[in-house]
Image (tube, rainbow, N blue to C red; front, side, top):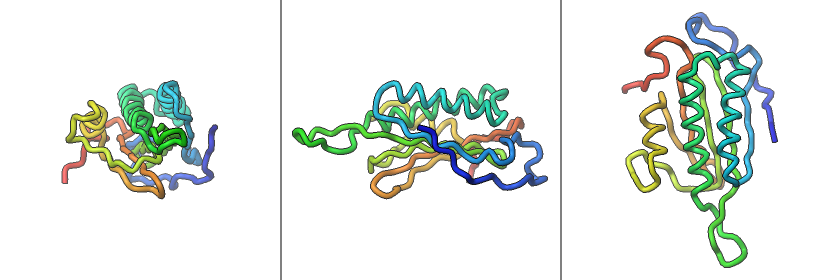
Length: 169
């Protein structure tokens, strides 16, 4: 199920002229997926299609990295049991929502689910997913969102060597 928001990115700004931008008025995309293994593949395909629509697909590194990291976050959302079901209290997976937005040289990808556990890049318990997000994303984070959480990352969309690299504080 596709749900497009009506929001529009800010108008052109000369400071961001070197950064490829989605078409003015593109807004953002938000899609909810049911808890099944094919959902991860579908989320990857959604990322590629949307970046193509926004004119960002010619940056193959951007597309590949966004697909990989969305895949990791979507897999985490599916693999983490979230709520006990009625038949014996066994944890079950729940749906997750992928949201994509791009403006001012930044692609932001979010995966929201009903889990409360905050992911950490420093633990090996769940594999490599958050290590990859930490290594490849410009920035990433997690915030509690009602009964669940949203894990997000940002990648640069401009063609310069410094675009999208981690900002050192």
